[in-house]
Image 1 (tube, rainbow, N blue to C red):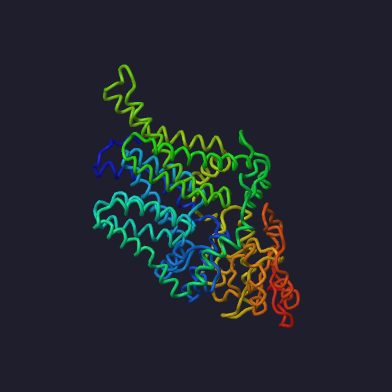
Image 2: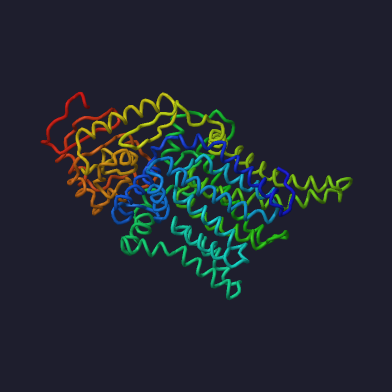
Length: 558
């Protein structure tokens, strides 16, 4: 990966090709991984619902800025509604992120740019290709920041500011980072460039106005700010600092239980999360100090990158889970490659004796970026062999999508379930479940998917809505979130009273996190189900309920 530090298009193409190959290697696998998480199911359901006239925040509860689901909905309208299309949109966001990091880092050489891009991808790859709002916003922010900083040409600056505005439209918590990029550029610019930056930023933020016109300012504020920041926070917050003896995140706890004792040497899995948390905070501080004392080239650029990294840290402070640590850590790892490679290269270039001033010495200097990349990735893998090492290796070495991948096909929708005997069993169960719902309903009927215990609304199988496109979600709460769906006045009880069929599960009854999610909420929705609905069939995991008194179901269809 020793690319000469020249602005020759051929060398730049090679420096981009290396990260691109790293993206392509796990791509087939990523397209075939199971799509049963609540997060991906929500993107699929909300985006497809837009095409049916159900708007996020107004008709469907949605905890993020709406940019990502509007983009996925646009892709669905052109290419059809499918998991593959949604994930290709997610791939586009990731490519934008990697391109932005490459362009930011190439000021220190093409080898440094390639290595910084690889570092970010290695940390982020295990998350897959979900068109998740955070990744979408971060990709737009990275590309926008690069163009704003490079934007001596007024058109480039305007496009960069516009992308920064769109970053906030995809993930509103990125707004402080956007301001930290655009405001300093605006203050130091000429009048003409200021006009371009201002115009671009307004253009990027303009979709907020369009969305507000469609749903109303109160509804938009409640959906993007009040619900996620105020009402939800107590039920999703995790202890700070993380407990080194107990993984706070439910799925990390479940993973610890299922896998048993770690086979890798080093820290226990909960302690790995704690170590990554402190490493991220320490790295952010160190990068800020290094940027302040920077003696190399492009000091203002490194300062901007370090400050943006600091602005991302609240994402981890609100919930220091493995995924949140990786979302922020991808950026920090990329900036870390630059911060290590540049002074290391200068040090190698000053080696005494026979290397000094020689061509070999200059070649050794170009080894600094790969050495920085290796130091960061090896350090992360040694510190967190499970949460970084194992998951990253699996992302790049698992078999690609093939005939052994289990899928469920229903009403023109295909849902990948993953690979293995367990995936086949679950796929068969879901296939029987949606077939039963078909027998019990007619197009346009209202369906609700949720937990058996509706006083604890911690998670839900939103993918079932995606597999039932002829039915209408009975409640605006397609996600089950603590403090939202189960709070008094949420409207869930009234929604259930008007539903035609319920699909309930007890598989999240064991949800346990050190926060308010363990406490029961409003009992009225559960009372409505007990008074009005009867169990008419289902599977071992999911039960189907309809209003009592309706005609029964043939046992053969159960």
